Length: 389
Ligand SMILES: *Cc1c(COP(=O)(O)O)cnc(C)c1O
Image (cartoon, rainbow, N blue to C red; front, side, top):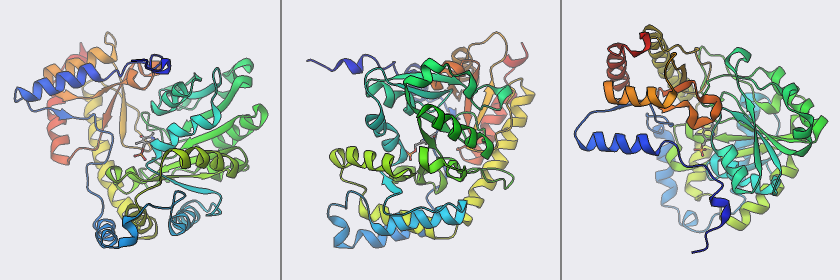
């Protein structure tokens, strides 16, 4: 077989060893509490499911969807952006629904990346940004996110020679895995940087609706001039607990959306229409489901961070997203620590290095596990004494 060389350029999937060990332990009957899951544990709210059930019976929804999606969905996205962020969008040219945001995050690389193009990528960060870049033949340039800079990249530290070769910059706030929220002023600085170097910005806003203490994170599009230089990816997966239905959207700069649509319209045939109508229901329906979800997550966050602190795994309190990014104690690598927690107290976490070299000194706990499982996990953690050694 003559497999394409681009596949060789991709790094191996790092989590595979630990996943194999988890499967092995489970087959031996060992009960593992997993803090390694990346989507909500609670089901999709019932009113959204009801809409799917009704729409599933409508024959028009059995046919190919329109590739650029139902006008009704694009209008619902524009409505939601106005309500939530006071951002105005033209539903015909500034909104593009996606088969989950990951799909668009991968495909946008094909619009901006040629061999040797540089893409600015946060480190640690969601692996999709660098993977999409590498599949398209480009080269990620990692922007370190440091705890003492509130996990914001230092734009001034990006060398001029790198900026001049870069076509795209990825940002993600609230951040996976850091849980950091960016202030609007940071987005304004990013817009200025993008203008100065002719770089397009992609903001991944998958977690803007997962926040705590009622403090709602901003949209990148609220920054002055943002729409001239960038787009924002959104997901219904986290906000409305719809990860399994595969629907998201991207909004903002027309030219970028047109380019992405050109690629997409040749690779996919849109989102199943009944699922588009679930999204309309979610975006136009009562938003109390978001607040209720966040209250549960906040209780879990507070509980976990406190216990982690007691056992010597210190973590900054996350302001958004549903992860706790805990520092690895002296004397451990993140992989050693993840392995030790698995072997000794039967807890699964993700080693930070999975999110890039900048994650070496961290492990990621997800709080999307049922309360009683979280309690069990916390009980086991309290019995672990490694952090104090
Ligand atoms: C979960 C996640 C996504 C992907 O979401 P989908 O819409 O389900 O594809 C994108 N970005 C980040 C940072 C995520 O954590």
